[in-house]
Image (cartoon, rainbow, N blue to C red; front, side, top):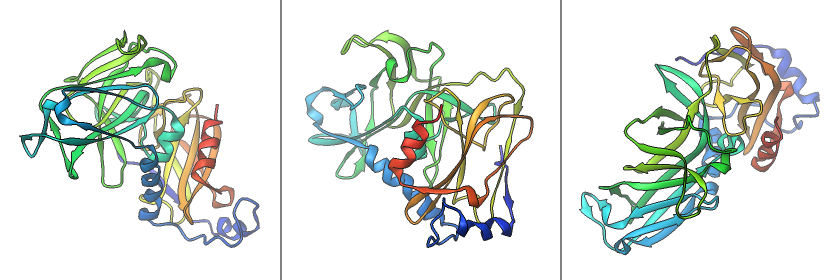
Length: 311
């Protein structure tokens, strides 16, 4: 599905910017570069990364994340350039459950369904990788992941396993992976909590998800943005009302009548440049306008607070 993004060539918007309280008079209003914009997300990815070290010859090893997720790996199944691994191994682990973290890391919940990008509701997004001497390792047997369902408002029986593919900028797209074994709502023997459980045979990005109910007619969204902002240096996000564990983009299709918030996001002087159109109800061929005069600059921490406050 080709992203529909149009541009506002309205010089009036640029002229009134210097007299608004939202943008400081001294800020350079030239549109940012792709490198600076996506650099904001990479900084937050680093902040979200948990690291563990373990001896590959210790056999079955279980790690518990900051949020109580259990990851179990058999060290004897690790391979480096096709050969069994000995000695210390470094593990990287990222867990994402809420839309503010999804925004700050650019790890949206957009899934591919019959060739169309549609919104997913997540039971947790995860990045898992093991390295030795900066060489990525592989697995010859499965590792297990147990995620408490309480982290995303309780067990949803329709949750299914998805694998994420990341492009050069860090944009992610999820696809259903029927090859992965998973169980929903079973008790985790380590914690006696209801959990989403899966057996994974590859490192990388994994997500528990299900598609938002799309029995209604669907529509695309067109965003009018100021000159200079478009593909590569900004994104338009969609936060669904009352669903905190989901975040989409206007590159997909959505149910007509959906209540949501639409968010313009870019970069300026190392901060997020943003504007939010709250309480939108989608209509057929929905159009949203983001004049530069309405935009504000915030830090990552301030952006998180703003997104968390959305209903």
